[in-house]
Image 1 (tube, rainbow, N blue to C red):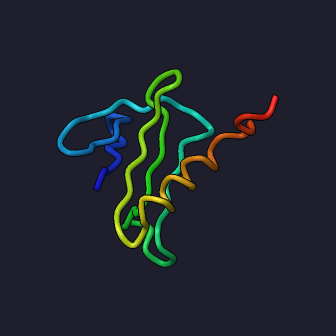
Image 2: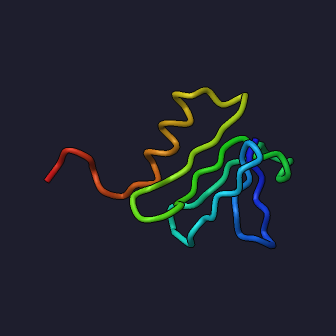
Length: 78
């Protein structure tokens, strides 16, 4: 599971550091009562590039839907 290294402002995932940029789309989900256990992380790396990491109990479909919720515009509607 990725962890946020706040001193470097980077997301550490699989031993690789990814620099996150400030964005209103960045968010993480934790179980109630356990803020240290991050089960979902979504963040912007650069223009049009995002990272999404998750672990159980979240499924890949739930993670995908949570990631889509970060975007305000409606896809396919002009």
